[in-house]
Image (cartoon, rainbow, N blue to C red; front, side, top):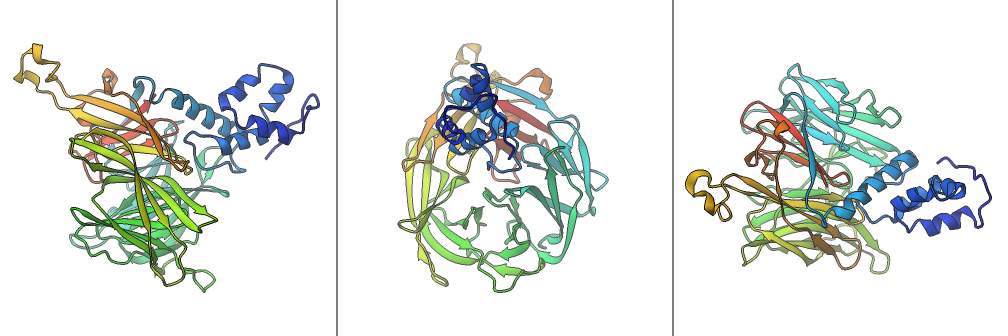
Length: 485
């Protein structure tokens, strides 16, 4: 991390000054640059911005890491703070745009910047949303598809893409190749691919550290560990429904619906291997450490605070945002606490499950979209489509029966960083779509879960950006971006 030279000696050591200022906001630090030359020097100190990033209470990416520039830390914090000030206190505003051209129904958005898809010529391509640059990443077979996911660590940002060959009816897909790309931070481009042939693995369950699974097949039960380059297998779940799986820093958590009113929750870890390095084509079964039962859950189940280890009780706590129907015609959103006591090898321990009420919304609303930082600072929204009655009622009944389809959005923030999880729910705001989106309408804006429904979307909580496609039944779809405020 570079350092700066101060034009005048500081009255206190740099470490003390940075410690004091690290509890202010990023915007206040930027404003200090206009006070004096000395404050201007302080406000550019990389040490200060690293401390600000650690202490910040707004959604932000993982960090700070040495490869993240001071400009990146500053821009990220200022942008997220500006969004936080008006996220729930002001009516919704947004800028919308559609990407030029049409794209296949299957795509992935990585680091909220690179759109990955396969074109008609079997090229695996990327599109940079910031610059518009496109890059051919790999040549794939006609019957191939892919799972793409990002990994962020102290060593930098990586993109992993698992290629698989689609089988026929009743046949699991077969994993054929693993591609690795490094993000060049100076040019914001992807490196040449490092290819690892992985023949013969059936099924696919793609994921990355500290984030939920991006895509999985109903009968697939493989996970890939990007740190070791090995695959691991989930044991079978005796249920008609596939598990909803989330990977955290310490455990793989699987929620499996056993019946309409019963959910099995299991925690797994990667068993320590005695061999120096497992081969990439090997598959090891995950080790079950904890399990418990709870009632019905609604999708999606969102990780809102990653693993926190208690040094006194030696237990690990994880927090999720869940929804369930109540008796008043609404959907209750709650903070689900999973507490996993320390376990010994080969022993399956019971986990403790508690929930805290957060807020309630209309039962007909779509599932919440949310994101944030691993320490529990979350930003999101829920939406509802009020279907219009058009010509069924006279104009004087428009207040009760809107003539056209209307989308209403309600924004929320969650602070899951403290012992008590709290939330703020904004007022509902009707959305009017700009004319430059062409045939985009309220009806086509309904957000669906799980994957495989008519729309697939990604929400970037730091920027307030929603990216998704509109599936009108054709082979190619339009991809639309909303920058919410």
